[in-house]
Structure formats: structure tokens, C-alpha cells
Amino acid sequence: MADYTFERETRTPFSEAFVVKDGGRDAGRLDLHFAGSGIVYATLCVPLGVDEDAVHELIAEIDERLVLTTDPYRDDFVVTVWRGAKAGVYSEELDEEDDDTNGASPAR
Image (cartoon, rainbow, N blue to C red; front, side, top):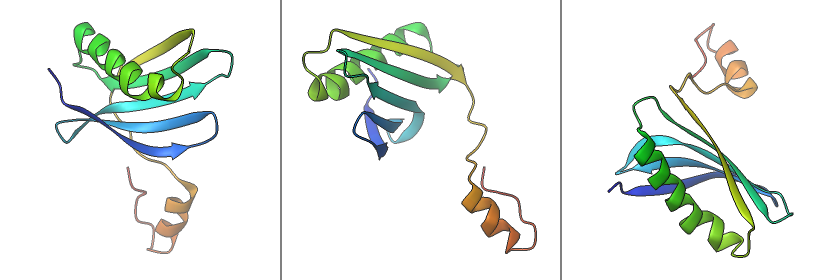
């Protein structure tokens, strides 16, 4: 069984974003959106090699540890899963800093 932890990156009144870790290594990214209509929507991004059983296990952990603790009376939990590879982190602020360092590439 995986040892999932969730590191919150951002939070608004109706949404949260997390880095998903498994035993200390990056295992995915999660965006949660609490629609206010009793439905919680999620976008879960995992690496290509993650199998279907592991996806279901992770969704169950997210539901139990993040969703139900925030909205215990939710009617539905709808998860869209993407499998792929991290392409990088892009930011206008990082691009501006790179301009000050004589054309260095942005952090990716």
C-alpha cells in the first residue's frame, strides 16, 4: 500500500491544489473544487506508469482524507484523471528573473 501525503500549494474559498507524494517522492498533482452544490470535482494528474488499481486507491485516500474532512455531506465526488509527465513550471515572474540573468532558461 502506498504512503500518500498531500502538500497544499494553494487554497481559495472553494478550491485547493496539492502536490501528491508517495514515500517522499512526487506521485502526482491534485486540484479540488468544492462546487457548493454538494458535488466535489477533482483533477488528478499521475505519472504514466500508475496502474488502475493505484489510481482507485489514491482516489479513495483523497476522498477520505481531503474531501470528506471538508465536506462530509457531499453528494458526489467526480474525478478526472490525467496520466502523463511533468513538462515544467512556468511563471511570468520566473521569466522576468531570467531576463536579469542574461537569458538563462526558465525553471522547468
